[in-house]
Image (cartoon, rainbow, N blue to C red; front, side, top):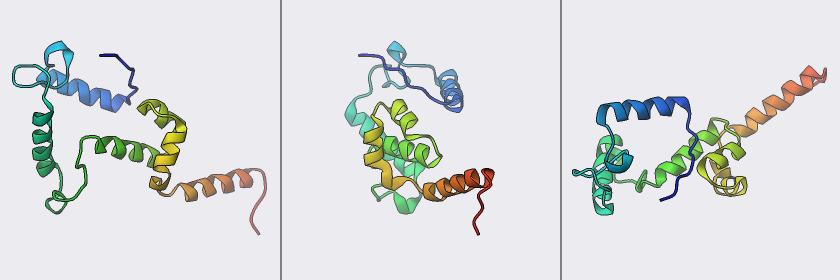
Length: 133
């Protein structure tokens, strides 16, 4: 197994530390383990994922494709960061993709950025003394 640094915001560090304080780690320092502390098998992982969706999602969304796979959380995270205004290059660095991949895959997921960009442009022009007539 190779290590890869994963930069996370301090708020997530606090959540992870609280989890580790409460539950400890599995063998070899894993965050989650099976009942004996070993690696969680893929069939167990999927079973638990399906059960967790029933608790986490509103009843009318359980049968939807929302968070149908654990990997979908990655997409949700990337979309959230982009919509929060995190620059594409920084999102790409954090998730291990190129900015081109992030832009190509997620360009339609960014909400309200055109309006935000227009506001920044207007502000910059106004600071330079250019005002709309």
